[in-house]
Image (cartoon, rainbow, N blue to C red):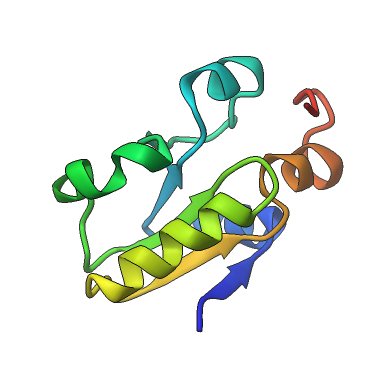
Length: 107
């Protein structure tokens, strides 16, 4: 079972000193159109298995996409690969735009 984390929860935990990887699995055009205003690691969903070694399996990983569907799939994949703590960013960049930073375009 993959746990959800809201954009606000992510920002609060990071502000509190939690070391987490924010993994953006959207395509390049999506990250250009609506960038996440946070330190991220961008690996498009289709490249995750090939680039999995770029991730620290012992570090908390929060996966984000547009609305939460792709990120949930990737989070499940990573958990199955032995990642210790994986979260799905609930609502994706759309929730981030709606709840945290309305300057981020919704698409």
